[in-house]
Image 1 (cartoon, rainbow, N blue to C red):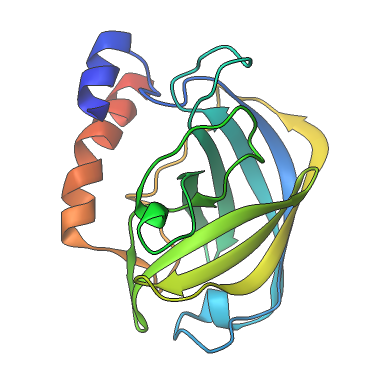
Image 2: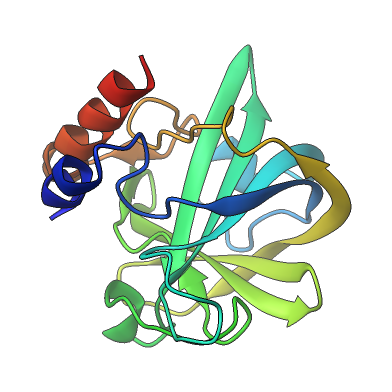
Length: 195
């Protein structure tokens, strides 16, 4: 579907075509129980770049799938986490949902990462204006909070920022091969459009 949208739009961003980029601060308290992923398990503070967007780009008065992209500095590079509006239930965490506002629904990574703890999802749930609670779950298990993201009002340029969850991953959170195959065609097309 993403490939079709990209071909129709002939744009670098087949979904989430327009958004607002701001700076943010992610305060990680550490995962309990431990996941085996140091970035989740260890407390820390990350100065991050965040892009909020609407998947289809419908007018603000209409419901849409909301997105939250977070660029996290890791080691010598950056990792990109992409969240979309879903639910947090055992089934709804894997289903896209629509709402009128970015705070209207929880957001998850939708597709699991391979981790030492098993298939792992991340979630971002609104906890107030420009504030999100970050949590993790394995499979259909319960959610465990591990941090808080606070967005600033310092804007960034939208055209220059491209997030790529296929190439840029958190160490210890790997894409399953089936996830990579699912995502790669649309992100490859987006990379080609940017060039």
